[in-house]
Amino acid sequence: MMNIDVHTHIVPESFPPVGNRPAGDLWPKMESQGLDDAGFEKSNVVISGRNFRTVLDRCWSSQRRIDEMPSEGFDKQVLSPMPELLAYRLTPDDGLALSRVLSETIARMMDYDPNRFFGLGAVPLQDVDLACRELSNIKSLGLQGVEILSNIQGISPGDPKFLPFFKEAESLGTSIFIHSQHPTFGERIEGPPVWNNAVGFPIESALAGASLIGGGVLKECPELRVCMSHGGGTLAQILPRLDYFWGVTGPSDLFPDPPSTYAKKLFYDDILFNNQSLRFLIDSVGSSQIMLGSDYPFQFRPQKPDDQFIDLKLTKSEIEGLSHTNCLRFLGLLD
Image (tube, rainbow, N blue to C red; front, side, top):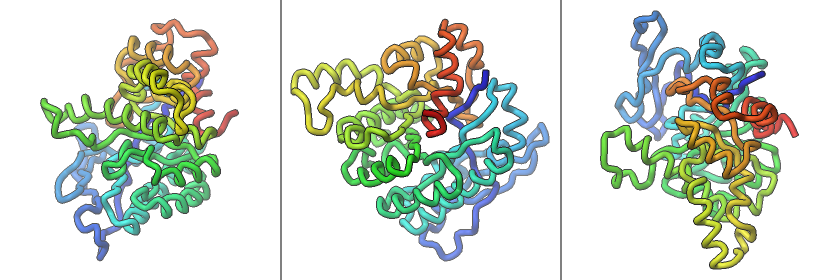
């Protein structure tokens, strides 16, 4: 059985110098830190004058990733940028330049072994018209789609201003992977810094998914393929509540059917950290919409996929779907 990891990230080995770009120190750069104890290259990703993250060469080395796939229980990966690099705070021109660095890096990593990798690039969504035009470049590079963030400078993806982008993606058959990042309510999260991720990301993902429903994107773009990261966060848990209030208020022009109907058209990775939560998601939206994910190389699955399939008592057809066919459908490579 072939296992595809839909949720993995890359960082380029280097970035072009910022030069005279308006971005200044918002433009990322890599600072080599030599070798780690195992002899692998490591570098700091410096953004805004500080080290955002220290990464190893598995972020840019296709061969290193191939070497590590067996130990993670995977055969193939879908590559997407480290979310922090989707810098919507840059000017549109700088955003386009950085997006192309990311997309072209992913295309080269795919070319290293096309049988092992698929790719999701980047677009400068701070300028919707520019992002729409860049989707054609994404296709010309051979990428299957793009990664976008759960909010674009504080604006949900379901906002009407982004509808032309989603319509263009639907028209071109471009897949959309929505990754949680920069919760807009971070000042309300009490706890250690990592809770911005642990608490904030699941809520961010639910807000983004709910905005696609409530904003009418999924009604207007019925053939659009969208995957929500981290299992859609808390979206599955609030679907009964959304359906209840839809029943109270009646159908809307933006979503004439119950919200759960649209949620079942979205795809989701399975990064939920326990099988009880994953079973709830499967029961809520159907096994046909769930894909394997790991967040490699920044997180590693607590359980290999094959062991998880056994624990969940999945049928043969469900295993086939979660392991690879659902992902191929999301990428537009299988009907």
